[in-house]
Picture (cartoon, helix red, strand yellow):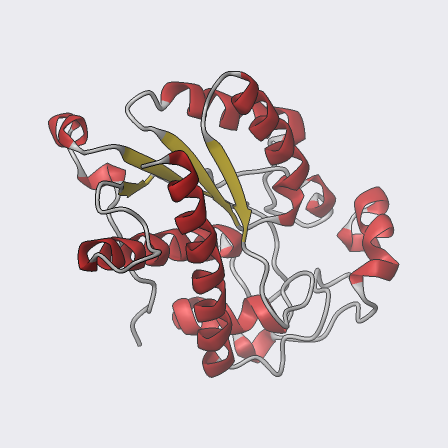
Length: 250
């Protein structure tokens, strides 16, 4: 079974003269994490979802701009997907072997410096797949805007999903990367809503809530549900990016 992650225009596939020749390019940066996702999902789940979303949005908006549809992005905008920032702020998962984290401050500074280096692009759009990166990205966005840069941060929240390694992420991964999902090991974890446990997770870590690292129940997950939720995610983020690019005049 092959992965279903789409591919868009990627920076790593271009040469510098090709980048120099692009007309008003916009850099899309996927951000994720390297953290436990229960016994059934890989450490890079957040990163995979962010990358797939970025690729799909770029491919879709490029196709629409070429068609010249009213209300879509201008044909002059060229979107390029950067390599992902694949290790983020994941201290809340440090009770699980294998989790890597550079912390909120270091991650914020990484994004700030990346944006400062992106002089070849008229703006940077961050597509974030990890909730633990939110504070860092808020800081990085504010500093980048203060630096005079164009930056927009968008988050990969999943409709109908659960906080961590539940039915939402598992379904989307079954759609995008089925070979990476071990459904035979899937099991329910902490079932209380995030509104009741969020403070505990941040203060004491996920291991204090769910020894298996799962918030929710991934067992009802299916690839069909994942396809629907992923399409909704791509449409929502793509719509917002189209608005941002119109505001930027690209």
